[in-house]
Image (tube, rainbow, N blue to C red; front, side, top):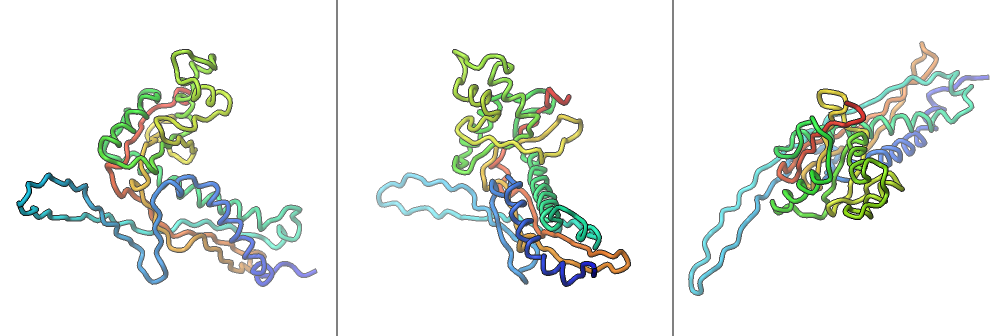
Length: 286
């Protein structure tokens, strides 16, 4: 019986693309929390985002001329680079495997690229100019309330404002909300939030904003030291050229076919004053 060829694998290629795009969208929480930009073919690999400063109106005395206000902009440039992953699928593995090799590859590629996008975006948290914590103590609800208050005081819109933390940092937050996990109801505490944390294992909303957990945050210096952040959507930007691409190349000497997945994107801070870092240490991973 003839083995698999590049022709037969190319017939399966649309399945790889569909699976990879679905998984990447499902696994990457950060992509939906930041400002997204798209570059078309032939438009270069950079996008410059103009930043308009906050303007102030003044009272006017009747009959006086309105003074002229000079409006100037700054620009932030996001540069596209490539993230990629490759695997060699042997003819024998396709022929002998009881599982759907194509779906498995799509899942692996999608998860890997989604994690890379998230890691590149969460790596920006530590570059916010202001925030709370020095990576020596556990996070508290007060830290999130303070971050939200500071952003609101700076006229940052509440719509699109979120909090993102590592699960091991979120543990300390949930433990504090539930009195160390021993008392589901507190007469002098935020009982609804505490009970939700006890029952469902997540915080949901705090200080009026959603709280998200993701493992796609790299520790900074020591294990357990993770940068989280409270930020508004316009604080961070993600620019992409297309979406995930898949291509194959026959490797006859290996009796197999290379399958390569790639994504062209760039991530960075757009408006630094729209975010506050949360630099804390996890008590369960000191």
